[in-house]
Image (cartoon, rainbow, N blue to C red; front, side):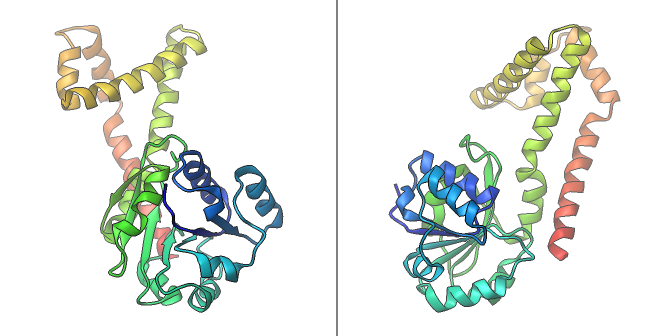
Length: 268
């Protein structure tokens, strides 16, 4: 369990998901976490639900913080937050930003050119321990400052900031593609004649089992496809129809569209 004091500026859904995971996983004790938000009802909920500190002043929380998590909207007043951080936080306190589209360069302009700044694109699978968050570090930050904290709500890939938009559209949006595939697969089972409950259980089991098979064997998906499909058999006929549906290219176009939109939002 880390001994760092962690202060969240912003207590929205993503901040809550991170708090819930790190408290549940005992990565951070609830009494080491403080939250500031303009919504008093939100603060009361977070305090009552997770036991985090919400009734102190922003100034005192900043003064005690080792990590300051910026969890506000990109259109919020980051300049004012930067002034507060520079006035009250210790020079050694690191900024962890989950603000979409705001670059490390822009963050440094607000929070200090020589302050440790870590830009994080968190995965939405925080409660499961699965999923990679994409993390870019500036020249004044190190993995040791944030690694234990970040691994408390999933896995981490440290990447160059130039890859952040790609990571967002592919990695962080990734569960969307999987959810859609599973829903479509279960619908196919119902269409073929299974009950909804039967189709749903089979779909989930096949997805989980296929991932486990890839991890355990270390084989490429094509190798497992070759093992599973006999000449002229059921499986290869199904794959033929799937290939005709342009499934692979459609999925790839979806990822590229998500990356493009991420870039557009950052430019806005």
